[in-house]
Structures are given as structure tokens and as C-alpha cells.
Image 1 (tube, rainbow, N blue to C red):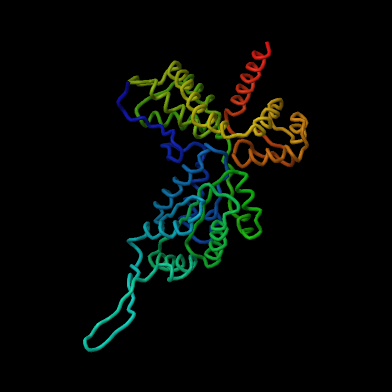
Image 2: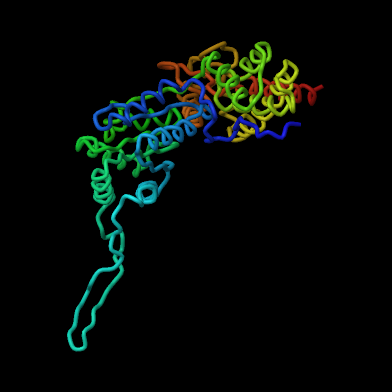
Length: 377
């Protein structure tokens, strides 16, 4: 086996060597950081199912911001996120900020001369907006912008709503600040529909769907070449077909194909075939099986009722196959949307969004039916 380091990174959130299919988004963000206040791309939302590369793209945007001379503060949409963004901003810009006084004078007496001091609690220095404004003022003096990123957005989190509301004021004040968020389609759409953050509806929104096969092939080939390996067209076709436009699967396939190729200077068809088998096994174990285990029996019935449809399914048809009312079926539709397993396709329609999940559900259904038939015989 080769001792060279595997150039593929099938770990969620890790920035790959070549980010397939995201060139235009990154080019637009690069331009936005260079132009600064007024560029609409500084307010961006990345929308996609699990494994579409949202977190990795956020990280890559942070790299682009740094190259443009900005500092970044990143967090996940959880309670405490506002304070986390403040602390991350302080940490990222510690070489730019004036240190705040840690103590304040409380009393002075003469004869003998003495003075009383107390530690200044940070919470008394103002609310989150005023404290962030102070940091932005100092950044402005040095000509430095600030990128804030929020991963896994979810509707109903008060701190997220507060962040968006305050950020809107920063934009109005033409401050050099950007906000990029990412999340599952269901959560993003719910957040945008909140009237208190209607400002988000004017943000740039990118749907991170299927990556074109040509971009997948280019990313695999170039990653291998950079690491000293070639791949012939037939082997590349096998890899590309297995990826199905799924960012995480691209890294899994590349990772296992690299291992299978060992010390060889080129990836062969045989290497590709064996690597794809291993990648699919990993995909099933790390993503599909764990997601399936989290589903309720009603969720599974909903997905199984979608299988007869080649592409999208109407909720009315799903309800009919489940022998339940449309209202009852819609509850499971909402649950599956929130989990990122399915996606909406217009009013009253949906489709299985997670690559490989349709085949996995079908296999599990067939196994269950076979077991039931065996018990009855």
C-alpha cells in the first residue's frame, strides 16, 4: 500500500482539496469581500440536504475572507451563539483591538493614600449589539472587515433572530460586515418566513443540489493528479457515476479508490470498482443506516409510500397509499423535511433528497416483507 497521504477527506465539514461545483459561489464571495459594503453577496444563505457540503463551503468562504484581509467568527445555531460570535471575533482580531480595562477605580482616600478597585464585568459594557458595534468601530479604523458564519440554522431560535435583526442595522450603517448562514431547506424556509427577519428574503440564496458530473470528474482527476496519480477515463466514469452528484460521496469514493490503488501510479478500472463498493458500504453505515434508525415507523411508512413514484410524489397519493388522511401524512412530511431526508417540489409534492436513501428504504422494506412472509409460511 502507498505511504503517501490520502488527498481525499470524507469527514463532514473538512474542506476538500478541490471543491467541485462551487466555483461560481466562491468567485462571487471573493468579489464581495474585495468590494465590501454594498455588495449583496455579503448576505448569503447556503441551503442543502445533509452531505451536500454546506459546512465545508462555509469554511472555504472563511479562507476567502482571510485572503481579502477580513477576520471571521463562526458558530452553530445553538443557545449561546451570540456570545460565541463575540468571543470568536475578539479572538480573531486580538491583534487589532484595544484591550478593555479589566478593573475600574471605585474609591480614593487620602492619609494614608489608598484606592479601591473592582473587576469590570464584561456584561456591564453594553448589550450584544453595542459590544459588537465597538469591535466593528475598531476594525473600521484598521480597514478590516468581519465575516460572521452560522451553521445548521433553525427557526425558532431567538438568538438567531436577534443576530439577523442586528446585522440588518450593521448593513444599514454600511459597516464592513458579512453574514453567511447554512442549513437544511426546511429550517431555512421557516426562518425566512418569520416576519421579524424579512430582511433575509433579500439575501443571496444558493441551493446546493446535485453537483454536475463534469465537475465531479474534474475534482476527482485533479485531486489525484495533485497527489501524483493518474486515472483513466473508464475508471473515472465508474467513480463519477457512483458519486451521484453528492459532495460527501465524492470524498468517500476518492478516499477508497486511492486506498485500492496502493502504490500504483494510476487508478485502474479494477481499483475504481473495488473503491466504489467500499464507499457505498461506508455511505450506508455512516449516513443512511444512522438516519434510518432515527426515523419513526410513520416516517418509514411515508418513505415507502413514495417508492412507486419515479421522481416526485404528491402528498395526496402518499396519504392514499398509507390509508391515512392528507393532514396526517403531512405531519410525517414535516418531520422528514426537517431531517433533510426529503425536499419539497412545489405545492403538495416532495421527493427523496438524500442520495442512496431511496434504494436503502427499498432494500429494508423488501427485507421486512421477506421476514414477514417467512414467519407466515
